[in-house]
Amino acid sequence: MRRVEPFRVAFVCTGNICRSPMAEIVFRDLAERTGLGSYVASTSSGTGDWHVGERADARTIEALGRRGYDGEHHRARQFSLEDFERNDLIVALDRSHERILSSWARTGEDADKLALLMSFDAAPDRVLDVPDPYYAGPEMFDEVLVMIEGAVRALFRQLEPAIRPAV
Image (tube, rainbow, N blue to C red):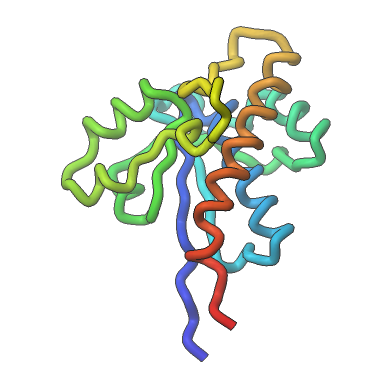
């Protein structure tokens, strides 16, 4: 039987301690719950290097925990140019990340891999940027997580037919 390479998705925010770890963890959980965990892989990173090697922000871990996710094992990393090669889709959490990633894209193929997370949300009143909760209180982390969950579900629904193995 031929082994199928997983579809690889990378989520990117500023420091990789709040928004992108949330998206990575929610995406992975959704893939596992639908039985597609071995057909997808998710990672996350930041455009900056301020938090490399650190755990996710404590408020991120707490917000994830309140919704039934485990964020304890996350360690921040910075996006590298090799991430363009390693991933099939690179999802920016806001337009500033999308602009930075676009400027780092070396080829049209790199640029074609970029998407904005909230662009997958079909709500008529959607916003395009997931707000950064870093300078806010714990309730903002909960609000951001709910936004991310909705957009990640929409993203997953779009990807699912392509990653589900033929029976």
